[in-house]
Image (cartoon, rainbow, N blue to C red; front, side, top):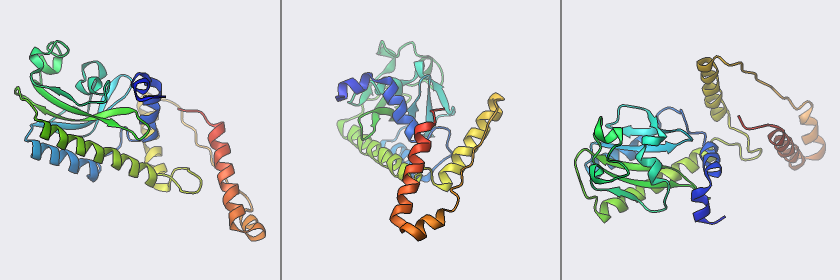
Length: 236
């Protein structure tokens, strides 16, 4: 599938976002440092790392923005992910796409915007890194290039975070990632008053496999078992 097709592949885009397991996670220094730098270097009152779901955008990190999420249909970043190129708006009040947007006509009174799509290595735009001002402003090509470099750093951090959250052998979640994910699922079950079940598996007498057939054979057992569990599970 080429890049143009991936811009239209909403199902694939949402799956790419889900793979990072980043939604509803707590603050992380790497992303906080990026928005701090964007705000200071570009001298903007607002900036954010925005991740666009099916019906909302959620901010992983933000400055000068009170809300933690907004509906997707009023999101500037939802427009930014429709293209490979930066979305730069000098004056939102004169742009027919945004002039009646409640974020323009009301708080926080957005006037100018520059957003760089957060493009995954496999070509999906899962969100954007954006800089926002409350007065009309023409972001210069140099400023947009700076924002683009920071967007690449954000995607790189997402990739590193994903690697750190997985066991290199089985591909399953690491202990830390599992604890964080389990905590999110518990909170979600409480919030929506839904039942929740936990299944535990133990490979009996696994030491005998390593002792009898050596560790490479044991590693293959782990990989095969993990792949079987994955193939038999369904997406939440």
